[in-house]
Image 1 (cartoon, rainbow, N blue to C red):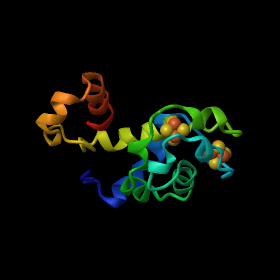
Image 2: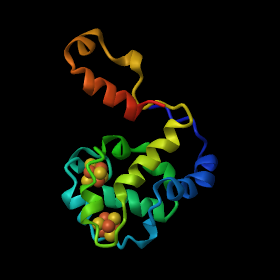
Image 3: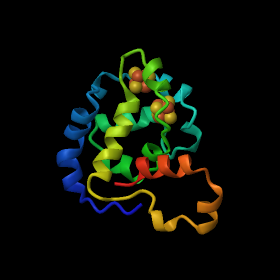
Amino acid sequence: MNVTLSSSELKKEGIEKTAQLSGANFFSCYQCGKCTAGCPASEFMDIPPHEVIRLLQIGQIEEILEKNSIWICASCITCAVRCPKGVDLAKIMEALRQIVLRKNVNYVHPSSVSKEELRTLPQIALIANFRKLTG
Ligand code: SF4
Ligand code: SF4
C-alpha cells in the first residue's frame, strides 16, 4: 500500500474522524486484551487489535496505518461482542480503512491481480476484496 497522507494531516483529522465514523469511544478501553484473545485474524496482524486501540488512545494513528492489521481484520465483530467495555473495535477498524480509502489510496491494486488469480479465485472473493481494499 502506498499511503500518501502526510503525518500532520493524519494526526489532525485521523483521531477525530475515527471516533466520528465508528461512533466508538476507544478511550473507555482498559486494555484487557479480550478482543485480541478472541480475534480469528490476530495471528496474521502486525499488531493485535488491542494495540490498535492503544495507539489510537495515544494519538499514534500513523503507526497503525503503517501496519497491516486494519486490512487483515475480517469484520467478524467477535471483538465487539467480547469487549467488557462495549468498544466496537470492528467499527473502529472499518473507520480506519475508510480514512485511507477516501483519500483514493488503495491497499490492493486491481491491476496487481494476475490472470491466473482472476481465472481461479471465486468471483465473490474478488468482489469482496475490492470492496474492502480499494477506494
Ligand atoms: S476487549 Fe475492549 S476493553 Fe478489552 S482491550 Fe479490547 S477493546 Fe479494550
Ligand atoms: S472484527 Fe476484526 S479485529 Fe475484531 S475479532 Fe474480527 S477480525 Fe478481529
